[in-house]
Image 1 (spheres, rainbow, N blue to C red):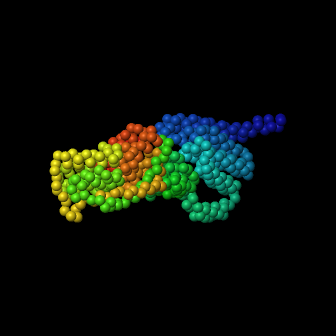
Image 2 (image 1 turned 90 degrees about the vertical axis):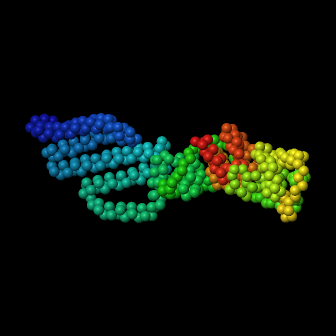
Image 3 (image 1 turned 90 degrees about the horizontal axis):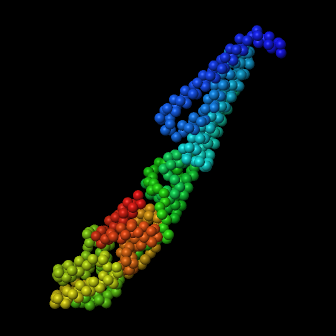
Length: 459
């Protein structure tokens, strides 16, 4: 013990200089950490950045550790230790510094990945990203440490580069999908449950977002896998979260329409009156409504076959105008429309003795409408699905659900309004659609009008 005391008394300068160097550098580290944290706290850009807290918390303690290592390195270098001991100490301190920096980078990267993927709980994408980045950090740290200790690393670098190139070429699609999934997740523009539509035509509800694909369920019930790389490159319209589910889904139907001659014909108004009184509803339905499909370009409100024949063939403008003025939309059933036509003809015949007859070959031929109802693959569970399907279905389907359900099937209103009111409970929207007069619009205009009303309602 006495020898040590004597040695310190004789060589105190050899101990004090390294110790003061260590204390000075560590004090500078404390001061720098305090100044840097204050400057960052006052910076608006730093405060607004989502990752600022993660980075600050991860650097507070390691920052002092680094200055501790730096102070130790300087103290060793200014000491009287032999050169080989100094070199050994420098390599040990350098290795510890590399390990510390690698640990900090790994910690910050993990926090930022979870932050930007919005993953409170680990997901496959975030775990995969963390593990890949951690492996890269570890490999780089090992290479630097080997270099510090004098090991040749050029062959290792060539092997690593070759492996990276081979893996990148082999898994280029997988890698592209993975980074695209991170882009989709970090942007938070698409979430599970959203209804999306790609400009390439695919549409449906998002079921899952994995590291490689995004799975959607189409309106037909089909499951579609979309590579995330495609999702990132294409234009995607996101209609948002699911709306209120209907208690019963809406099944879109369509129909085939055939015309069948009855073999019955009229030459004058009296015969027209007598035959019309006994005509079945499907005959009246055809002559009152078939123009909506055959004359889609006519708007507003074309007339019915009876009015056209009386006016153009018999030349009776007055009766033709009276028949044409009957608003078929105001009647709940075809039977009611038929009765109004019969009453109009009866009233006219009571007050007018009309003996005019048509020329041979110009008789009014009564035609019946034969309808075959066919189901489609389209099913809507909410208003957003309903709108998307309404864009796709044929005008035959619209005609069936708007006109035939109201008159020929005697429902009093269109199928769309009934479903919206009863299965969705949206009475206001149902009444708004029911108030649209389909007789003053073409079927395409009617389609667009219903779509615009619903889209305005759900926004």
